[in-house]
Amino acid sequence: MTLQDILWLILSVLGIFTIIIVITRVFGLRTFAKMSSFDFASTIAVGSVLASIILNTDYSLLKGGIVLTTIIAFQTLFSFLVRKNKFMKQLFTNKPQIIMWNGKILYKQLKSCNVGESDLIAKLREANVHDFNEVKAVVFESTGDVSVIHNDENRAVESRMLSDVNTQDL
Image 1 (cartoon, rainbow, N blue to C red):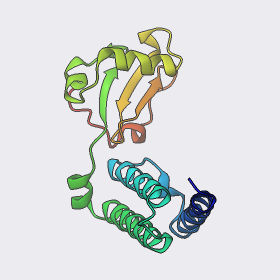
Image 2 (cartoon, helix red, strand yellow):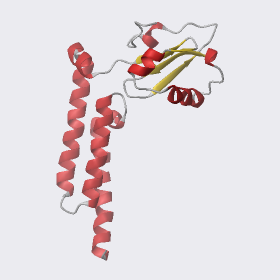
Image 3 (cartoon, rainbow, N blue to C red):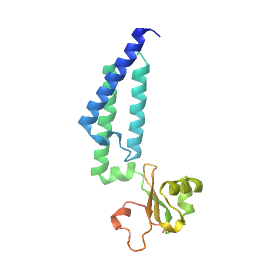
Image 4 (cartoon, helix red, strand yellow):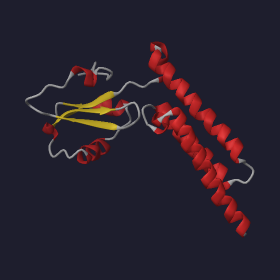
């Protein structure tokens, strides 16, 4: 590798990250949030484009900037449409699923989400759960994340916390 190659790599990294910072400032912080599976896919696509631009000398910074702007603009438009249109939301958004309720593992929901009991238990440990009875609910989010709501005998779960969650099998 020549000195010229090394300088090109450094300039490519600086250039493309400058472009990404500008794009993020224009389109907002949601650009890299994992709010939906589409956001996650967009983030993967952006990472792939970044790597291609930096490592492949056939891609120019201008071409990379255009591709990144297009991906993020489409993501922004798509997120707006899903937020504003019920049909789009139903069509393109996975509904979060409850996989544990009141300390009981819901094996049918675990299976439908393709989550193993050992994966669930690992998430409970991450949430500092010592005993299943400490759990009010575990929600498998539409992003693939797992949320643990701790059981507090003195408080009910606010209805809005589970308003978009599939609770039909409880």
